[in-house]
Image 1 (cartoon, rainbow, N blue to C red):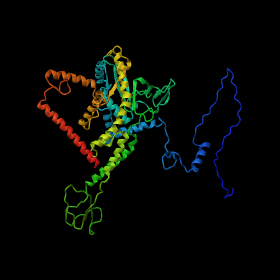
Image 2: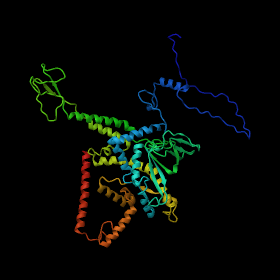
Image 3: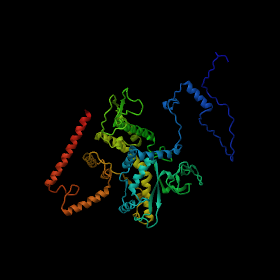
Image 4: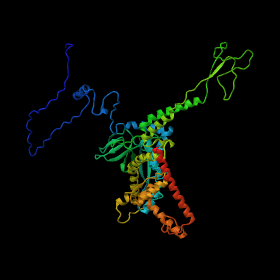
Length: 546
């Protein structure tokens, strides 16, 4: 081929004309005609891959979605699927546990998640008083290890899910007489180490096991394949092959990354590298500060001095040597004639240290679902209005964790198992006419969130109830209380007050009581507090506008 001859490759569009096809055979009454359908998938390489490569070269590598570009400037990772990266979870768990043990910011973030999601406990609102009393008694001895009540177990579940990515809770049946409440049930918390990653195979029943979780043909979990002991903690000998445990006896608590994720990853996986680099930077600044707290002296010898490393030996006849290597704090040393000591200026601290540190910590906080002030507990840079706006955003995430994970995956299954155990042990009998959905389904009440401006927020609740926009039950739940318990306590207090001849505002007839000077002073103080709060809000609005 001559050098001047050019070979070009052109892609022409053509219209496909189907060739005449033979007539399909007529099926006989007792003959079944099966059509063979050939499924093709687009793969890298081959004719289709070559055509795509040529087209990409001719079009300049442009794609409709800019993020779909194959430019080497951007990383194009391989999609592992919903469970293809599960073998990395043990490494992530180990690093997350190490970070919680050694990095103060990370440890605080894990605790803050548990404090905000669980706090002093998410409690069920049980409308049967005898069942509620039995549940309260059982909750105090629910821990199989005997360390916590049910609320304490919730707190540790939430903290461990954030640190490790997942927690297993096994329902343990007990013998008659083991429990003070009489309900033969306890909860055993297990770390993710009990559920082996990589145990993927077909079970004897024909179901597939993926990373220790067995599902049937309709995608329902039927078994969890667990070790008898924690393989990282047990020093004796035990069967290294996991055994199946019925899914009805296990609560697998985790936040799935995808809708098909079988296992949970540590919540700080996205920022573990950044956090370690931040720790290195902080340590470097601390070392720099340590150097700044000391001083270094450089001295020059006179020309007549000994130039060896022995130092100045003093004048002839002197008994003492002058040593510049080590000087005690506060010491004054007379330098020999001709020596010129000079102080060395140490490097200054990075002027952007505080700004950079806050920015880096903000990335850690946001990745976990919090704001940076919740990690540092430094609220000096925000006012109450900004804080309230931040807490509203964080509250949406916290509520989603409370209802979609803690309640759905742990609290509601545990409550149903408790009721079943109480009925089977004849410790509680459903009332006549009660249906299972009446006593098996229950509402849960999260812990109170607290108030930034109690007077303003309580008055807003009062106005909303009076206008019919909400109910006393919902307002009581915002405070973390059960309205039925409040009404019973108010009734008891009212009866006791009437016997004692006392009159308080929540009770009947308080408006008809004579206004004593003490009550008048209290009302005056309340009105003044309201006026002060309104004035403060107005001043803040003026500052923001300015």
